[in-house]
Image (cartoon, rainbow, N blue to C red; front, side):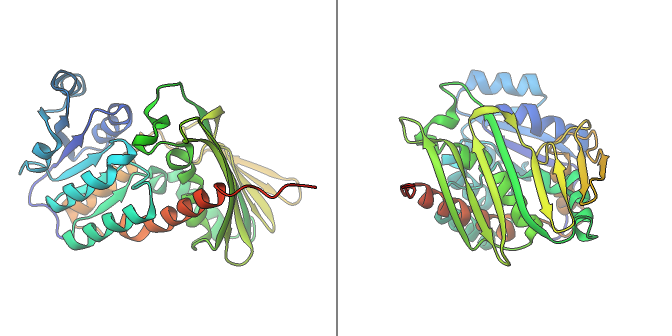
Length: 333
């Protein structure tokens, strides 16, 4: 796409979510070539405080005002899951590039609607799965491509942490749940590594009294007898350890989704050899994806990992996992 006629990229943030000030804004500052022009909220005092504390130029009340602003080029959507589809479509229709928090949508049907809006508008849309743009992921793919562990047969991946009562991710009206919030990460990693789409799932969940999944776990089958064994949880100690098992060894990654410089990739051979390396730079978590978006918007670079190419496969798997988890498991006699 043709680049913008001005530099820097002018961003709007919809809402005052914690991830916006903890992750998005520090990454934007580190990358450069972009500025937080406006934050839009529903509570005036809170929105103005967010702007003042985080160096955002202006605070406005009402998300529409940010989308109608001609001085906004791109929109970051960190709203609750239940609001992603509506406001992402609105931003695309307003002619803005969009970075929407994961999951892009709660269901595959919603995802199709959003992707149709992206195609119709011609504006680029990304789902904020930042590990796709990080050096650690590049290194994993490089090791796999050169045959360091032979043919990949199985991925074992977890994303666990604990949350407190009252967290919005436990609210069924806001499309909460562990599968949507963090189960999407192992699923996207498996699709990336296998470079293929799933063929079937088997899954179970543990639900809250409100019907939100506190834990979901299962198996996702891929062509050629390959599989993902995944576990997502809101009630276990923090863990994102991932094992990638091949015919000639395995890769163990301590934090593949939001790695820090202390995190490691271990290459374990069939001869019991172990090679440990650190493949994570000290750049903030969203630096890679924001830097890429700036290159697309300012320099006309070819976009990578657009939602229209990436998002539906994961959404379809998550829908299938929910259907499978709703079926009673076969009893053992």
